[in-house]
Image (cartoon, rainbow, N blue to C red; front, side, top):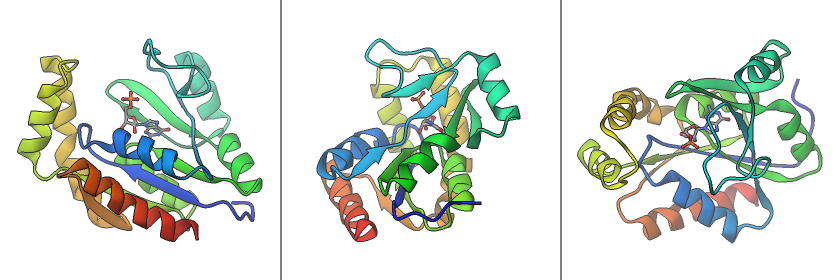
Length: 189
Ligand code: 5GP
C-alpha cells in the first residue's frame, strides 16, 4: 500500500529524441522543491554520469535479485538493458514530503500511475515522426542499429499518449518547457 504523504509526483515520458531530458533538467532547475528520482539500471555508465546521482548502476544479477524481492515500483527492458524505479527511494522521499520528478519510458510512466494514482503524467510529443527521426539522426551518437531500435518503439509510445494527464508538443524547446513548467507549478501548489 502507498503510504500517506504530502510529496507530489511528476512524471515526464516521451519517445527517445523528443527533448524530454532537456525539458526535465530545466524544470528541475526552476523548481528547487522538486527532486529527481534516481532509477536503477544495468546499462553501462556514461563518462559524464555519477552512480547515485544519474542512476544506480547495478549488475544484471543484482537487478534481477531486486526484482524477485519486489524492490521495484516498476521496471522495463529498454534497448536490451533493465531500468527500474526503486520503491525504497520513492517512499522515503514522499514520506519526507519531497516532490519527485521521474524521467522514465512511456510504459514505466503508466506503471507509476497505477502505483501512485495521484501522480501527474506529462507526455512530451515530437511535432511528427519525421521530425523525431531527423533529431535522432542529428545526435551523431546514434548508429544505424540504435536508430532502428529507437524508431521501432515509437508507434507503441505515441499510442499511449492518450492515457497521460497532459500532452505537450515539443516543436520549440523553450515553449514546450514553459508549458511543462505551468503544469508542474499547478500540480505542486
Ligand atoms: P538512457 O539510457 O538514455 O538514460 O534511458 C533510456 C530510457 O530509459 C529513457 O526513456 C529513460 O527515460 C528510461 N528510464 C530511465 N529510468 C527508468 C526507470 O526507472 N523505469 C523506466 N521504465 N524507464 C526508465
